[in-house]
Figure: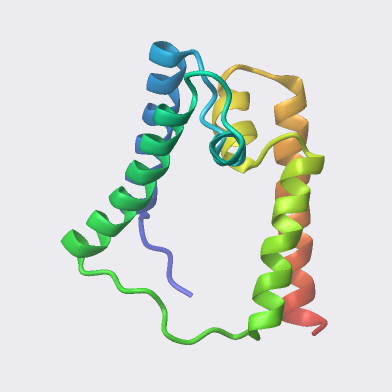
Length: 139
């Protein structure tokens, strides 16, 4: 396996961090995707529009990047539809139990030096590593 410098990952991380910082500075909100999406489903006062625009921008930005860079979605998956749906459900449950997702804790929480977010992100990454190990070596 050859290591290549992940320029697109570096740029993506910088853009996500910048978006999180701008949302915090100008709107006083944390850019945690699960919280933004959850608030979009059951909005509070004056919350709907910025949440909707954030989600549209996130999806639109991904689509635009695919068009500009010529990236396509993978057409085959190594898992059944049931496994993919179950994984999505477990991620949603985990975000609820963890009071946020990796974007909220990992990008915004660590940037604010939140101990809870640092611990949560370490747990997320440990579980991800264990999951990959099990998937590759035990299943």
